[in-house]
Length: 261
Image (tube, rainbow, N blue to C red):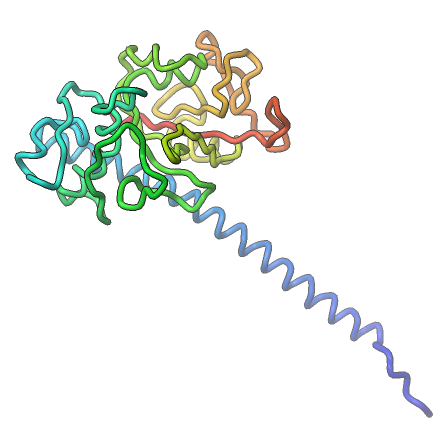
């Protein structure tokens, strides 16, 4: 009898099982990589918090803001103004320096790994290697910010509200490119909530962590949070539906700020 050269149902079933296993492994692998990247954000938040506290205890000053840095590391570091804030006010070169030199001071003190050089200038260059630490999520970077961040995130106001005494924050989601203040929000709302919940209270406006999207909203509709109005700061919740879009049709993305003080 002439044998049929086609596949039997058993053979086809085996092929389908193998394909499904491979597909599942690929999807699972991608999810594991993504989870590992989010976990690394939390690890880095804690790392900079610890380094910040250690530096403050040793030098009785804040990294970046330290006004005697050039005495300790001559030719390697610039001084801050010593006012207790690590600031990044637009147009004030000295305060932009403080935010970047935050990492240089920590490096010179031996409190973080890597190499971070000193910087003077109103904006970061396109090549930010050895200036600020970046993550492999979007084009995002960690960046310190001073005073009033919670107020800023929950009003959409400009730098004018930074005078509100709200301490120093480490922000994940900023990237300065070619002299422009370019905000790259790397996290979906559900991802931001996951980090917030593991590290703090899981609420976008209260506790140690605060969330915002881009552009910073000034309406009750919010985007990363149910509302970004200052009056709703205690009751706002995360918009965890990652299918939601912003006003121009892009997926909603968030940035997180963690209080250092």
